[in-house]
Image (cartoon, rainbow, N blue to C red; front, side, top):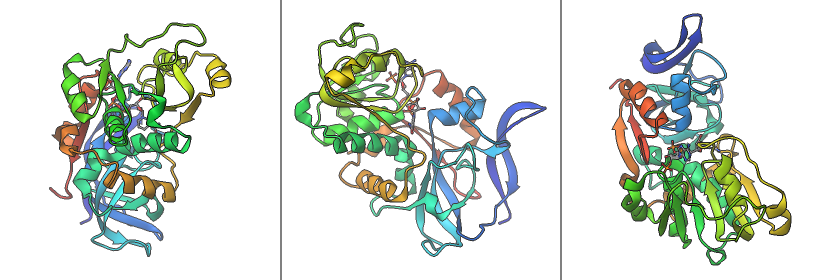
Length: 332
Ligand SMILES: NC(=O)c1ccc[n+]([C@@H]2O[C@H](COP(=O)([O-])OP(=O)(O)OC[C@H]3O[C@@H](n4cnc5c(N)ncnc54)[C@H](OP(=O)(O)O)[C@@H]3O)[C@@H](O)[C@H]2O)c1
């Protein structure tokens, strides 16, 4: 095997463009591992990168894909050997280093996590960065004292990849979850994942005073902007808000009052550079006690590399829910 298929993204004097190309298979240097990719998944950022609608890529040309799972083909690190199943998410994948939308991925060994015993490449990529980020948010909230008795947890961007997995984890841990969603037709799907209540994006209680009636124990926020600002004003004393995403905007207009008068904590979540000990701890949870009951319920579509442009457009126009799995399979 000397050549492979890869979904390459270019930005040069011929413009911004992306598509499948044949490129050489990289050779691992000392400390690196070559993986035969069998599965990946699609994140919002993959769609921004693949279409050029967001400036997320740091070097061109690059192979897209923030996530990958597969089998070690060659290893130049003592921790991995050919045949091992592994997961790669985060670090520079897809924006600063060739990513998972290819037959092969070559990365430093310390970017990898060995496949937990009750996951395999396909199921790990149903979770992927979305599940890992949801787990990171829950981990940070628990560490900071979040308890079910403090009140319901709001999950915004509920039908998205991160949101739907956060709902599942939180409900497994005994929290009452209220999902905020713009997709009224997916209410029974959200309830099936563990949401107790569902409200529309414009139905959040509270107004614009610095402090409004406290109704939420805490929140997992994928949306940012005005929605996050309103949440800060309506969380109970010592509740936690995990800030993950910006689907609704990057601005945050609030006051210090929720923080200094209610002790509310805003917990930043960055899934990209999580050191190995925490990374493997969160994957162990995702494989066992935090694993969604029915992972298949989360998959809304399975595609191959040729479908990328169409899926990116669907994602950016808000016409997807749950997780989109990418089946690759080296040479297939
Ligand atoms: N911090 C990190 O490390 C990290 C990791 C992964 C993702 N993220 C970010 O987290 C967010 C969620 O990621 P994802 O993979 O779950 O994305 P996704 O699958 O595209 O889901 C985003 C969800 O947000 C809601 N939404 C979309 N546009 C909105 C708007 N204008 N106003 C309010 N809600 C809106 C939609 O849910 P409803 O239709 O149900 O309302 C949508 O399904 C993204 O911003 C992503 O970039 C951050």
